[in-house]
Image 1: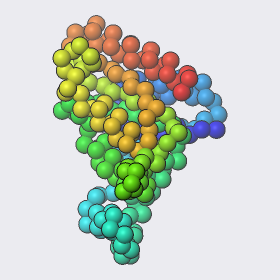
Image 2: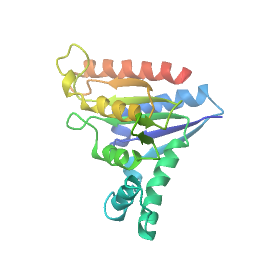
Image 3: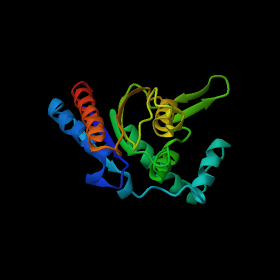
Length: 209
């Protein structure tokens, strides 16, 4: 039995196109993998650790090879808990809208807590960085108002999928399927065609995920 962790990053909930397509994915996935479990992590309903004070001091203590103070150890445990929950999954599904060409700040907060030495990556002076979350697969549903794919002239502005794919690749998650819901704005028939295309890819991906 495998565990799928679904990470939801839109505050619009039922009105969110990324969430709608992700839920289609989950429905099909559950029917195709009835013995698997699904955990939902709604980032807007999650209390993520603040990365200041004792928490940031705890990180630099690790980087410099120093022992944690009791306060640092307590603060660092909340970071470890986030990373261990993430690593407990076998598969991942992300859904997120584009904000100002990039990702919502809540996603950046999650990334900044998650990407930590010894938890999701390691570093060796000889071999460099190494991701510690390997042998797993992921899918990401991205919604954006315009079109940013090849040939649109807007490719360089897609800091949404580039950010997530880059971070996931850094920690070892390189088996990633991208599902784009675009454009969500503009003529209704164009937006609906983009939504339908994304749902079809979500369905086919979920069946074999």
